[in-house]
Length: 189
Image (cartoon, rainbow, N blue to C red; front, top):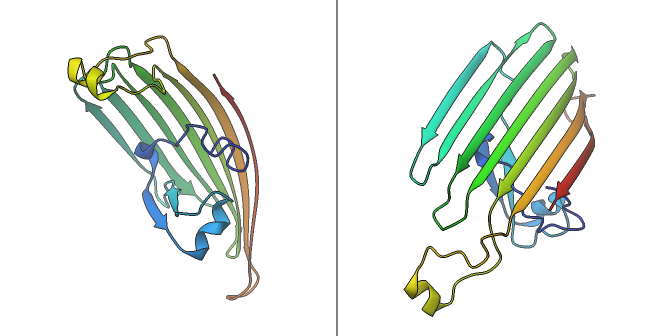
């Protein structure tokens, strides 16, 4: 997230289209993911770096000008593995003046030092522009026009990049080290 410890409601969720799977965590284990996890956590898991060269391309189109393009590819060559994914989606929205546009680029690399040690680096860049508002419609306004936008000039702009470095080392089958270092910078208007 943009600021999970100080502003957990920062209106950013990584695009589900680039996730390998989504896990729902409830119970005491969710405390690992931050202080605002009372009801549970959605753990969004990105794709693993493939062992052999592979890739995929996906394109979707729908109503209200919705268009999505997603491509992912990578592989492992000796001790080095890489994965790159790119996402572009946009649409006019189902309400008046509610267009949106999202771009997301992720690069992941892994260097396997030995059978028991590897180093993984991940870089992500995200841009969003959407015409959305906090204002909802009353029952009367909804009855007049359910597609009305009360604040057509409200616009949300998000620009974000992040980096993560992960070291995994297995001392024994029971003793393992997992160390993460990460950095991010976000601008939200």
